[in-house]
Length: 214
Image (tube, rainbow, N blue to C red; front, side, top):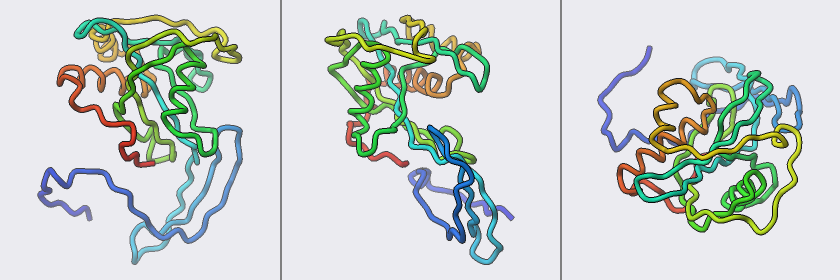
């Protein structure tokens, strides 16, 4: 039976917690992520349950803004995503697939590699788990501003080779989210978070060393 009680708003914060893992095994190993299986005792006095999930290294996303205050544009890229059979408009993003690489360094690298741009101003915008019931993937979205061209262009391949890039008014991007035009979760989360942060004069932004649950 679910326990219900009044909760102080100050307690409404996600927290790391552990349960007893009775056994762990790797079912499949892939290029980007693995498929793992755990037998975990969720409740102390009950039998372990089996949970299968994608073991993922995590990723960073970048909301890139340019323009005058209150009239900013957001950078979007159209990229083919084979699992869903669609071309999706997305913010720049990339895997944390280099061991020991600092998260901000990874974000700067991905921005250069995907857009040939650099940013002088970086802030933490928002964090989220992409699918916490079936994947360990955690994404941190950064806000990048004060944009300038990178010193050199990057050679792209595979899905990135034919990406289309454009700038869109941030207000119109929010309208596009609610119209169902955008489906990439990092894009949707990033657009809405950036728009709300702007409404609050960027007060919700966090420093680059802000804790990240992952």
